Length: 74
Length: 272
Image (tube, rainbow over all chains, first blue to last red; front, side, top):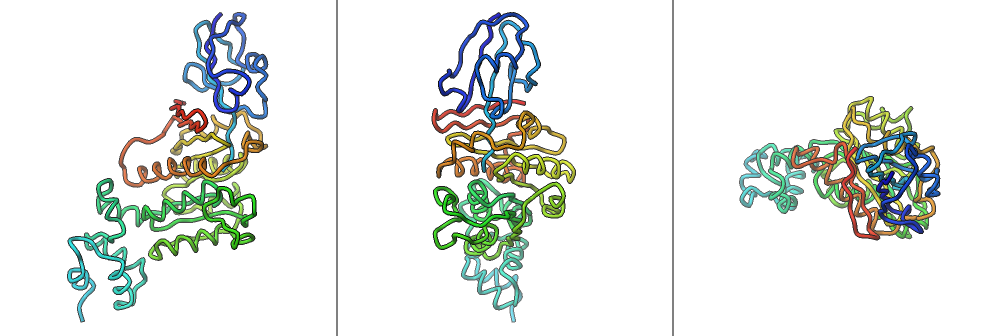
């Protein structure tokens, strides 16, 4: 399957801003996060097709995944 | 001896009462500056300091702001700018909560900080600053850490709560207390070049969604730090939300967050 992955803020560093990427069918968001080596402690909001989701959701062909780092300062 | 109404009628320029006459009225009628400001509004007049607000806010809306109470949790990077802007906007009562004193590493960004104030209470400094901007306003300074045990007492009576804290644990406590008390929460957070702002009404679940994956450890701000401009930018978005909640104007950032990237100069309106 092919999904569009959008990364924000620091998650772009050494990776990309937006890419169409190929993955095995039924791959979960959590597995994609591991594949991208995103630091788990810095994980903020995750959106699948503009809706908030948890990491255990399986991706479908054509989905758009947006991943934000945790921003907590003030 | 003339009444206060007669005094205003004699001194008004159009419907504006200048600061000079607000101060004179307080002395002449043995009133506080806040009581005089309330009387000016009640007479359908406008303190002249707000004249450049009037294309955006009616006198009635400006009066509503003066009668409102906003609690600001945190008087550091975000909070310093938030408090400054709320005071100049004309919010009548501001509760400023922060347990900390100024340290040298605050000087790169925290509006209320300066070398002579190193070691001074951030909340008490906010009171001095607001008293300097407009002594008709009431700033209640509380030098305590906000948590889910004391939070309800600290923000009781607030019409809006503004999140200007620097950690996830305090944000979760803010979420819980505001949900329990039924108070709208304007949320803002920053890290380096980045920030986001959102407005959560009771029953909305923005904070839970944004920080659900987080334990109470610091986020990317821990290694990114914060420059001078990111808190000012995010704080301005937060105060615009407060102004709209209190005045009823415009569209709010409800069920969405505005992601701000000052490095790529991009904003992203993210629905939840």
